[in-house]
Image (cartoon, one colour):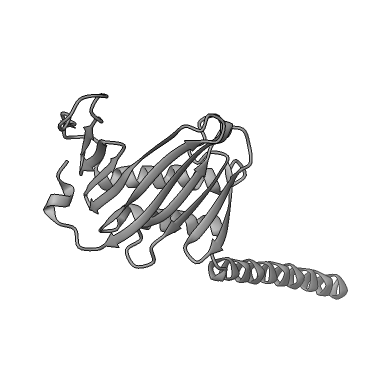
Length: 219
């Protein structure tokens, strides 16, 4: 009787020891996961979000070219951002947001001079911060997890290379891309996106300033 009770006590202690050890290992693993540095994909999502929430004017050039046809189009590329307001000028047009109201100014028709009419959307849509949150969530799904669309490599501080790893005709960053971000303002400082059929889009930023004036935000 005493022998049986003794083994029962030992067995009960062993169970408690296993549970305690398991809990300790799980706690340690949790701490190690929290302490682990973020992956390149996670870092990319972080800096992308920062670029969408920063205050700056980034000016440069945009170029789209085709290695197959030799066609090329180019224009100024200017992003002025003072959340919850943002304007992006490219190829003669403007798109942006004034918090919950989108702004769109189409490029003038060929042969037409002078500014084109701008449209300001109705209020009550997603706010600036809500739009950014939706965009960031979509980006995170594209670069992390088992169903990710791109692999991400941090090629230097603030610069990332993306490579498409599964077929998706609407892949927003083409078959491969490279993005760099300004460490002070968070603004995108350069990008190159390669699409299928030889199409390449390049943005080269030549100046970035953190002082945003009211005139910068006028369509």
